[in-house]
Length: 376
Image (cartoon, rainbow, N blue to C red; front, side):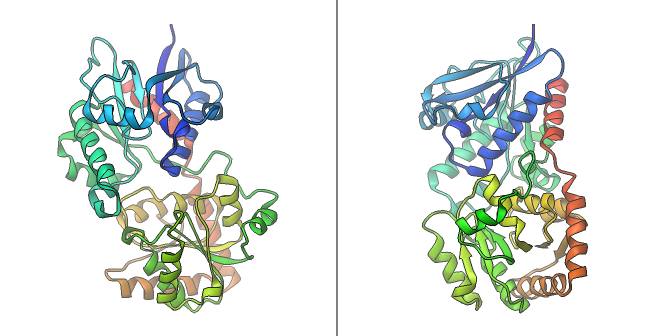
C-alpha cells in the first residue's frame, strides 16, 4: 500500500496570495516528481474555485475536495471545527490546514504547515483585521497541534520562536525557489513591448506599504545619479498612484517610472531579462521572492542588509548596512552607482548572482519535505 502525502492546494483553486499560489504549485510538482518508491501525492482543495487549476500539477494520485469553499473552509479551520479533510500525512504550503488534535504515533497522522512571511505579527496595520486575526489564530493552533512548522530561512525561524516559543524544536528550515525552469524567454523583447517597458532599467518590487521599503529604494535610485528608467513590479491594483507619489517625492522624473502589477512567471522573467540591477530595500521578515528571482537569472542585486537578505544573498550581491532611511538611500545609491559604473563591475555582479542562485531549487525543497515527513 502506497504512503500518501496529502498537499493542501487551496491557493491553486482560489488564489488570494500570488506568491504562495506559485510556491504551492511548484512544491507540489516537485513532490510528485521526487516521490520516493512506494509513495504518492494527493491534493486537498476546497470546493469551487478555478476549473482545471489542479491540472497544473500532473501526476497527482487523486484530489480530495472539501464540502466548503475556501472562505468558509478558512473560517472552519480557524475555529478548529470539522472540515471533512480527515487525517493522514498532510503538508500545507501555508497555515491553511486542519490543525486539530491527532495521533501521530498510533494513527500515523501528521500535519505540517508553512510560514513565508511574518507581516501579520511585524506589520499588522498593513493587513486587514480579519487577515491578522486569522493568521494569529492559526499560529496558535499550530503551536498546539502542528507536528512541524516550515519556514524558508533560519533568521525567520529565530523570529518565529520569539513570537511562538511553544513551537520549540518543531521549526524546520526549507527555502523556496523561483519556478522550475525559470529563465528569460526567447520572446522576451515582445513581452516587454506588450508590457510597455523600455530596454535597460533599474528594477524594484513591492508597493507603497512601509514594510516594503519602496520609498527608500526609490530615494536610493535617485541618489545614485544613474540615468536609467525605473521599473516597479508586484504593485497591487489601485496602488499605482501611491507608488508614483513615492517616486516623485524621491525626485525621480515621472517619465522615468514604469509601474506594473503581479506578472506571471514568463512575463516576470522577461522583465528581469532587461534589468541592469535589482534594488531590494525591504527589511521585512519574509522570504524575498524577487531577490531569489534575480539570483536565479544572474541579475546584479543591491540589497539593504537585513537578517533575511544576509542569509539569502550571502556573497551573491551587494549588501548595504543602514540604520536609517538616509543611510539606506545614500548607501544603496552609492552601491548602485558603483555596480553600474562599468561593464566589468556589472558583469562581475551578474556572475556572483548566478552562482548564488544555484542554491535554490524546488526539487531540493521537495526532497527535504519528504525527509521531514519520514522523520516524523
